[in-house]
Length: 162
Image 1 (cartoon, rainbow, N blue to C red):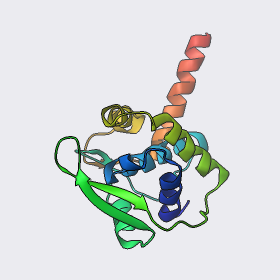
Image 2: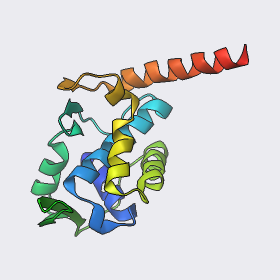
Image 3: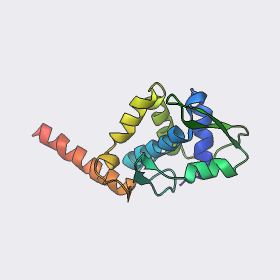
Image 4: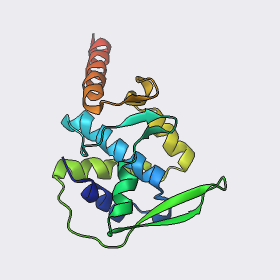
């Protein structure tokens, strides 16, 4: 598994709309990357123990890493609804230690989400299998959920071919 710092640096370097990288969006980009990698490579990229709360998949790991790490800066602004938004910026980069599969997974998520407004982005997050199949206020075992998801997908494909 990759270091969270490396994951965040890669996202912050590659994501084209830097002014959209709030703590919430960045957190959910890491979640989606972990989910994608779990489906395709049977493991998360990060070691985050994801939790499903009122705001979907959420943890404080990303914010804590950004807050303590001098490579990142948090700036405060207002979102569309007039509430505080924490924008995350990369101020000091470094060569990241990510595998080809990890980079591919992160880049696929960036490509899939870069043109989504926040509402569509959140709808995508809420439509993921772990969120649809887990009750709120529980941890999300993404690798186990990916195994079930892939099995269901395989079974449906077999049913269509019969």
